[in-house]
Image 1 (cartoon, helix red, strand yellow):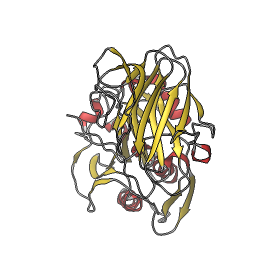
Image 2 (tube, one colour):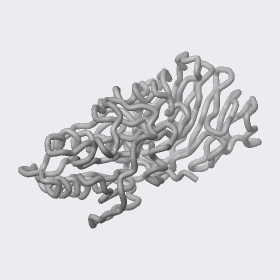
Image 3 (cartoon, helix red, strand yellow):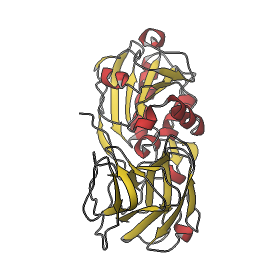
Image 4 (cartoon, helix red, strand yellow):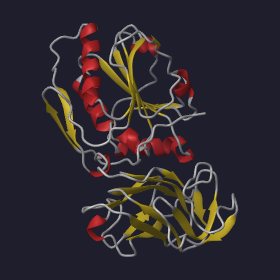
Length: 360
């Protein structure tokens, strides 16, 4: 069984303001730490990287070519907000320590089927301005070689090719950067800037709000929970659904004609809607068009009205927006005091695929 690391939300996009400050990295909000090892150890040899189906920003790399370098291996995927929140740190570490001998490798290991497609990964890497090497691990070969179970997950390898440190989840950025510095010094680097990075993130990479009461929720029946439309799911077949009349917190439902599969629900005829009773500052959805690629127009409401100033970066104050590619869309970012709210998204064209809700 593959285990993934989740917080209460999941979405990519624009980087925040990045700066260098003294003594420690400053982060805010829930960090979602799973595990970190405070003391350096010789855990095992670095596995080879030969399982990638392709590489971006680099020729293929392997243990032999990386010998003598300090290597940071970052497992991530482009629709996972937990993977995206650390990305500004990983990017600036790659630049800050490159001349001192650090090589950063992003291992893109997908969760959803569309994340396996090279073109989608290429687009995401470009849009996120990731310039260090990225191994496309669509078959999970590198994931299994590292015996990895989480994303995000970072591994640090010393100049002799030994894994010396790992960290699972978000946060602990200052501690992690100090380990990078320690390994670089051990490898002979001198004159390091011993300050650590501090980042003030905005947009989708901002730390989650302080009162998140809604969990990540899948739409496909394979991992769905909280589904409250009358009659439940009809698996892998077309059915006309209606939303629950008075959903409780964290219940959701469909309206209109949908075909619900294990991974996603596909709208068969327009209009169709999804409703969710939630409690969080931010609401995101992983959605995309079908393989025809035709854009799908949508309209968002909050408690039955346009979101106005509470719209997200992917929706207008009037609630309008458009699905053009498969990714994580930020649809709501509330500005005021948080309370239970009912979110509704109505799709005005058929063919949208809905994968998951995440919150922040």
